[in-house]
Length: 79
Image (cartoon, rainbow, N blue to C red; front, top):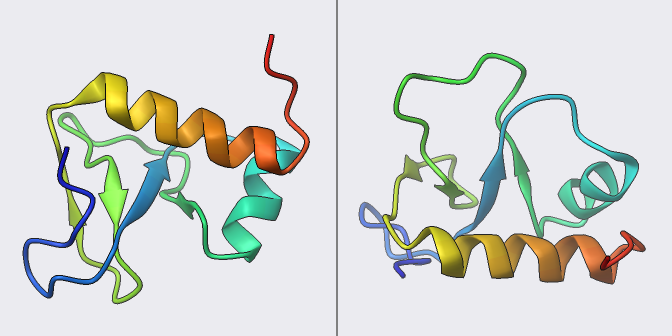
């Protein structure tokens, strides 16, 4: 998993597309998650750094785990 930006080296946060749940909106306000909008690209990136660089990392399991941990920290039910 590469959660560091390949362009600037800054730490990245999970990037999601679609209509965000309340917990995702809260996480985005705290800078722990990035919202990509409603339109998903054909090959969507899954990370974003504070400078707005976006990239795709193939380790989907690690991304899923990080995303769930962020959402749960903001009150999303684990089950």
